[in-house]
Length: 561
Image (cartoon, rainbow, N blue to C red; front, side):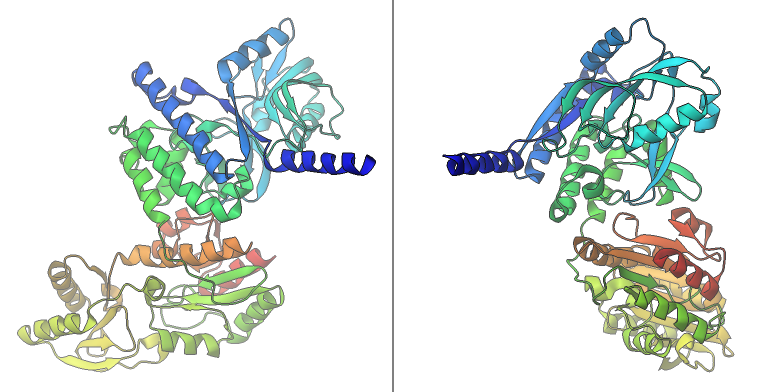
């Protein structure tokens, strides 16, 4: 009998583990849409549909083996205010007003994996500034939820150091029993830690919702972003199974598109201010329609399934070559020995070091080998990953015909100067060794010809309507690619970043321009050297103090620790 009872208990426990796990949500309803000047009935209908489909998506993510619990915000507020009647209160819950309100949040680094502490919420002052408005005395503290208790412990320490005495903590939803909290906790809803997967707020999955999204710290301040790729690791923040994170994120963006189809005129600047700041980092002006941004995000998550090219325990750090690792004179700004030393240090710490450049494959691989880089090489701006080929023979014929008509000499095909190529004379030279793109060097008396590159580049832009033509007159250089050259590296790195993510590894790109940024901090981080463009720095997770080689070494050391 004892043995049978033990077996039954084990089966019961297994059933709880696999079938009866709970996932509570606090449904903020129209509170999350208060900033939108829209008809309340229309907002309500759109929100209810979003919530219904959001919960279905979570069911899908956990293969139907969870129970979604929906708590109504307004009902919870009434219960909270009834319990606190007659007491002075401090609210940490942005949805519930107390006698005093402390607007604080956990803050994360880009990608949403690393917590950097508790700070004032975006748009409010620092914690110290807010605390000056709260007189020292006895209070009940109102919190929306407690999971591990780590956040509330840190907050209680701040209160104690400022003379604020907490009599009790009243929380909406409590999971587990934080052993490190010595103050009584009263909860409207309480669960054991083994019966709940996670808990969340629905607004955090709707782009542009009021106060919605994870709070993320960039070098220039705080932003907000929905709890999905490309911005946030949904496994880390919402416990979505890792293998389903990409597809889950796509489904959430589809729900966003369906929601904003009801309000197609709403612009980014009409929505959450700090989500608009996040989008500004990747090139949006704020005048775009939110529905169009959601469609763009869905497109960003469509990339080839690309396995990582090297076996590492920690991940891969890719480096751009021109104007990042080498300067305008095609030289390292520190000795090759110093570069090799930091590369060896990274390798000893189980990181791979690779190159990601517009340059062709063979010379780029040779350069890497000569400088101690034995990791993967992404060449021709990432087209080697996407396999988007051009009709290069036809493009060369177009260039030759133009040169003949304009009495411009066609020079012998040549390697780029950074690989020791010598382009002598005046005229146009086609770059050697490319399979997916075309490079053109325009020269006059052995020097870059600004006027010639602008003239030929303008002609090619007009002639090659659906092809990306990148003109760099200061270098006498023209690059021709199958699609927008500013996006191709990002697409390749997102693919590799996703492959590494599934293996619990990291991906980084170090560069100097917006074409080096991946627009997906949850899949591939971006470090900018000091000589990077302002646009690139604005998109960077970390910015070096040094330029060129010095900056690269500084960034590598920062990443590997």
